[in-house]
Length: 328
Picture 1 (cartoon, rainbow, N blue to C red):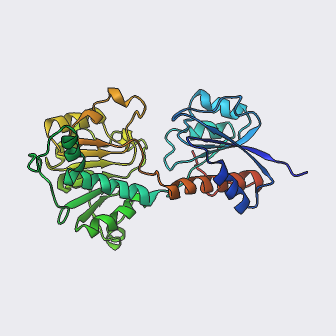
Picture 2: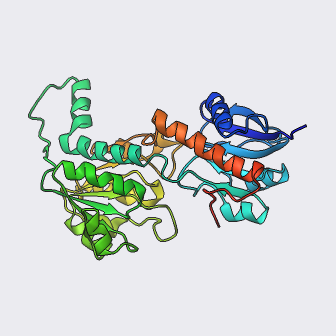
Picture 3: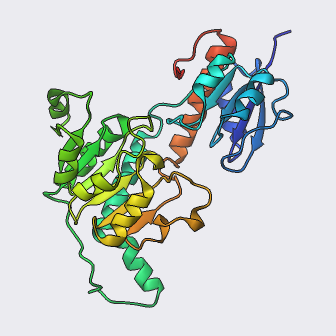
């Protein structure tokens, strides 16, 4: 009798139907036992939920501290994080306990790029701000806020991975110049993509009309944008963050928005994404905050499941390291 490997689908919404479809397409329907558990954002499975589980597909599932031991003690062999960033997972701690980690690189690049540009255009055209006025009972086309055209403005991209590359044709179609600060990219490589290279982050900040962050959260990028960096930006500049909240010193950003150091910010991420009611940035009138929704499309959601199921099959059924493995 073929051994069936138990896989926990630990997701916000039930994805079991599509996961079974993926298993069938991979020829693994008879070898995997898929168990679905929907959960609240930023929760992790209990030892009871992990009983007999060899792999976990986790969405908005932190695995740090005691959660590492819970996974390892239960006999989990793979944590398939349904994300690109894995700062919420202790990869080294899991590896030390013999648990592999995979992610889903590039699954939502187009979606996040579109969202970054949408936030930029919303701020330039004052869409959300105008809607707030109307909801407050004010109908005034001359509301005292400047609207701008993107043409002939400079969009500065911080780092140049899959998402930033997708931003380039979108903003160039609007007539924008593109400047990139990416220490590992050459001027020739960036020129081939239609961009100019900034020799330093300071240069990019000082010359860009829009600064869009596309860097992973790693030690060198934590609080990359603080009070000093914000002071370098133009008073008319906009800051867009669809990367990770902790890339920005959020108190410094709130200070800059309140003081008029920069004109506005569009954020899809925050450092702490649970108790937003007590945070300053969502209350700033020149700041738009969306709840980490840049990736939420049907196509991206299906890609998360299919890429994660692929990693499960590679490790559990083929006995090899997943293509999308994350190393410590």
